[in-house]
Image 1: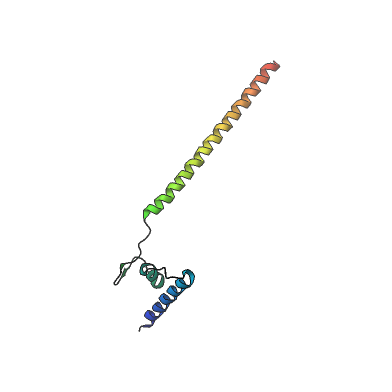
Image 2: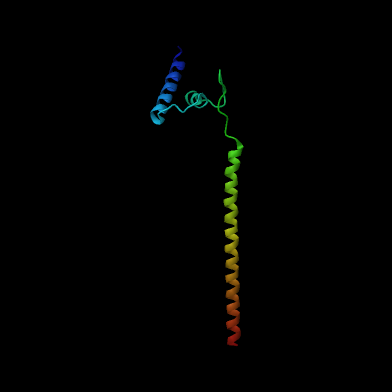
Length: 104
């Protein structure tokens, strides 16, 4: 056997042994195990077809929706605070104006 093939085979065996040790059963599929051993992504595996695919944009979209919601909530909070500040400023001006009128 080629040395590289033998090394990869030993790594694959160790990976499966580790899974059995940790989970008491081998939970890895060939699509999960081969890329870890061969350090390859989305490649054709003879007899198994194409390997793991990159993450879908849907997942990224869901995360960005969460971020958008958080940004919207923060913007609403800022708008609320700005309204409170302007109300306080106008009430102070009103209070100053009423005390000046009373002094005259």
